[in-house]
Image 1: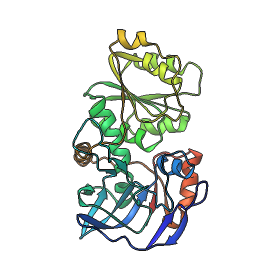
Image 2: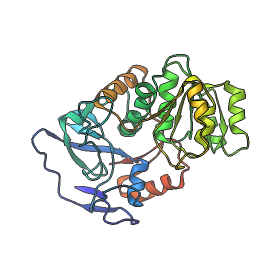
Image 3: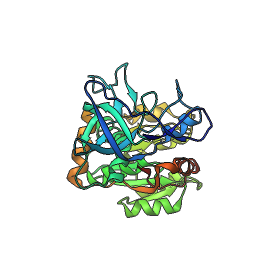
Image 4: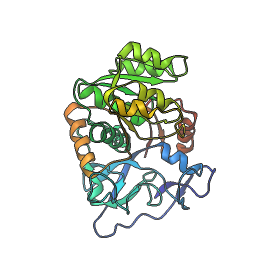
Length: 320
């Protein structure tokens, strides 16, 4: 089969002929039609990930066919039996386990789910990791309720956009932040009420004027800006964090946290229960993941460059 193979750090992925995977007992051999990129894939190529192995086929998101069924792949491997936390054997598909940037993949049958009927191959491939991460952060960790006011930071990435779509469908009032006015306008067209450009001075004061305060904040950046996000929370507010691209937090006031009875909640990936609930919700509301661009598998490095440049609005997909 053809696959994009990572053979060394800081190198292009190589389109190579590799042996077809041989399913072991309990595994399904899926013929992939589409795969989607995540920042995890980019970080691995840059050496910003633990225990990187070579050669590796990256890719956590994939959709294809298994025994005549249209299926997508649940990318949390061996989560375990505790809904609250993953077990010691937990890992994400796509290094060290061979991933979805290939024509075929062999995965446990328990990780294969039927695609919601309204989704295309590309939309289905764009859903698993982003949908799972957004769902768990919003509904399991932050317990979002209808009518609550939500702030989603860094709109434009796959998880943030899916969180926007899920929250709007759940009846929340959603605001966003971005470094791009165009992305804010696109988010408003998807159902956000308004947004602010975090590159402008006083962005937090502008949000305070627009919304008053937030019951839920979903953030992927961390850094010093998190202190301002916490200050924007209503009493009893919940801050869900699923990434930390801006690093450690300085200036966070514990007084605000304890007087307002706030919760700061970490969230990463999700359990089989989260995935099933997310798919049911996506099907019920016929939500379609936002796709930025689709590249053929052979142009995987161009797709990676697109992600590294950061201009995307939605998921970047490989057509296989």
